Image 1 (cartoon, rainbow, N blue to C red):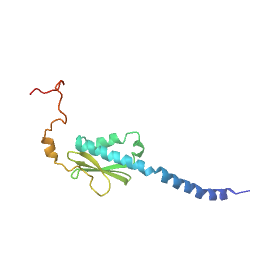
Image 2 (cartoon, helix red, strand yellow):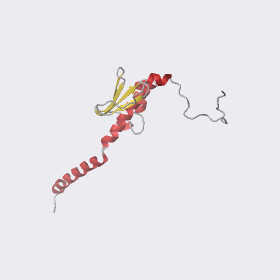
Image 3 (cartoon, helix red, strand yellow):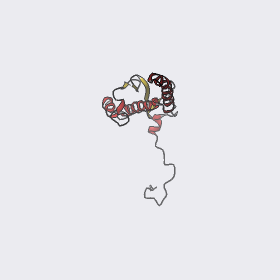
Image 4 (cartoon, rainbow, N blue to C red):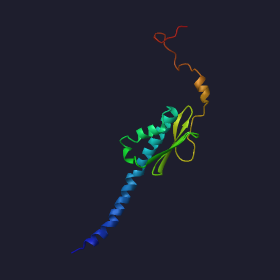
Length: 145
């Protein structure tokens, strides 16, 4: 008769290999990175674009269905001078979002700055561009000469 210790000893490496294969295929860290990215971008947008209180925004954001399970471990750091928000789960899987005037919040991926269109924001705000196509004469929006 085969002992239970021998069976447990033989199945332990198989179970360990199956768990390693499952985490390689499923990648649970990606879901956590999506959650931290969502929190960082949401807090950044609602703080710097809309002017809301970041603590209230964070509290409302972590009550969402997919993020609620990470609530005890989720943290954020807001740098008002650099206008950057960083969110992490227990200090791991950090995501950063930065506010850029005229563009809103942009996720920072890696050490490089995000690509932003090279244009003069103030000139774009002041310029009144005509419509791309002329308004037809039969339209009710036609402007009289």
